[in-house]
Amino acid sequence: MVGAGAGGCVAAARLFDAGCEVHLFEAGEVSETNTSPHLAESTSRTDLIDGSVFASTYTGGFRYPYLRGRALGGTTAINALVQMWGTKDDWDAWSAVHGCTGWNWRSVSAEIALLGFPSHFASASETGPVTRAVLAAARGMGAGEARQVGETSDGAGSVALSLREGRRADAFSVFITPRVLEDAGRMIVHVGEPVEEIAVEADRARGVVVGDEEFIADGVVLAAGTVWSPILLRRSGVSRAGIGRNLKDHPAISLWLRLRDGVDTAPASLDVTGLVVASSVDDSDINLLPVDPNQLVVAVTKVSSVGHVVEVDGTAEVVLGTIETHDDATRMLAALRLAADLCATKEFGAVVESVSIDAAGTALAALLAHDDETVISYVRRQPGAYSHAVGTCRMGVERDSDAVVDNAGAVFGVDGLWVADASVFPDIPRAATQLPVMAVAGRIASGIAERLR
Ligand SMILES: Cc1cc2nc3c(=O)[nH]c(=O)nc-3n(C[C@H](O)[C@H](O)[C@H](O)COP(=O)(O)OP(=O)(O)OC[C@H]3O[C@@H](n4cnc5c(N)ncnc54)[C@H](O)[C@@H]3O)c2cc1C
Image (cartoon, rainbow, N blue to C red; front, side):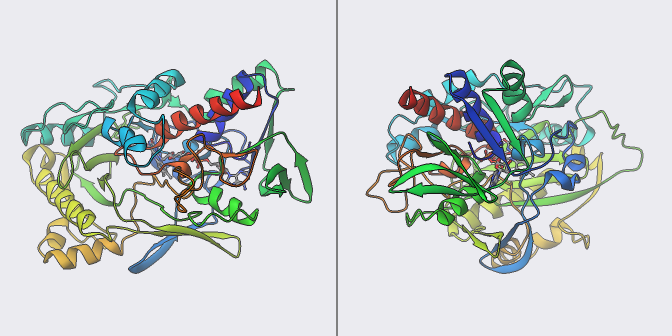
């Protein structure tokens, strides 16, 4: 097992439960993940973040660190805790559009329910002032109640968070720690041991290479995430054309909020608990999500633009397709205008004094005063994504050269090698990705367990 992130931990646990001896290799060296529920605090913990991943867009602009977790729990050790299941339409498209037989809303939602991942809805007293203001403003604008479980529906409402007794629930502590305690001889975790490549011989995975040593195994499951899984496949000599391509992330812009004097942002309050979902080109393709008391993320969740990832001298270079297509640009314009309308409401204004789009303090209204082309060009250059990248080893049928794995997660052309992480998604769901990744990895691992039995 390569990678102890969202997918890797679920897959490792599933194989362990099926009776396998599991060796879980994790590049990160931090053995105690951050338990803070607050994104700002957790992302400042540089020891949990992969410093060798960078992003840029086709249009130029900044090259900037692209956040990925490198720790036990992977990106679930640093993410914003928000839980969404994706919409029924998106999951049904896996089989109906992408040819991934057996993958649809029914099979995936059953798998998410099976995970039993800790889930917490903030009470009114836990909810922070910005979230309260955003939800009140959205209601004032006519938004109904949004349900985040499997329906394409617009509205505003609370989202569930990955919290257990007030602390971050990451994939490692939930899925792996109990199994290590149950049988440390069968769930063996190799911390701070990056896998260099998969040892492939005569079209069969023989094991993994770690440092100078080769570790022999009956099968290898790659779960190094959307950025590193394709790079490891390339390093290992796997040659499907789609490796590293088809990368999709939700384009996003952060609005920076200056709160009015006297607004109470008690440390105990959670400002990542309210979500506004709206429609522009497609149903429910816009999210407005406060992620801390000073930041409101404006994101597009239905995406047609694609990017890619390549390795350059040991670093991973992600090129994001940020709103390259006309549809995506139209969606982003609609999202920004919706955000501007929301920011102009009296409910929001009672809490937030000013809203800017960059560190220089440029007002959102000033950006939107420009013509559409200028706004689009600005957004294309921004270092902004919702951080939900998928698709670089995407699932599909063998005759499609862009597909890298089959619908069981098995890599085309190499026996005994599977991928079980966000990289296998044939398309990005209209959702934050941690629960979807865990569900997909769980299903793939159940299939592997059947085969190895
Ligand atoms: C800042 C941020 C906020 C986010 N917020 C949310 C949110 O609120 N809700 C949500 O649902 N999703 C969120 N996400 C996305 C979500 O966390 C990811 O989609 C999910 O964790 C991806 O799972 P994964 O298994 O594909 O990869 P990861 O969880 O990234 O795990 C990959 C693991 O593989 C390890 N690895 C890489 N290379 C090697 C190697 N060579 N050898 C060994 N190990 C290796 C990495 O160190 C890492 O631990 C967020 C992401 C980011 C970056």
